Length: 89
Image (cartoon, rainbow, N blue to C red; front, side, top):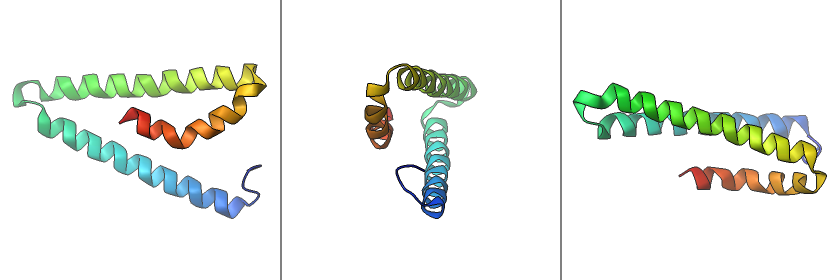
């Protein structure tokens, strides 16, 4: 909010980000289901979701610790946001 200055613009970007996240997860789930052999499809999907959700939780915790403890890194975390989706691919 402090960077944008407008609640309407913030809501638009949040809506856009949520829609992108939903599409990203749906496409990745479809890709994993199509590439896995029939006999291990459920186990592969379970492992994929376990690793993916665990990495999201771990990354959020790490960035939260860095951002709260060291004010110097707050600007770097803000700059890192748009590029973090590129790193996960």
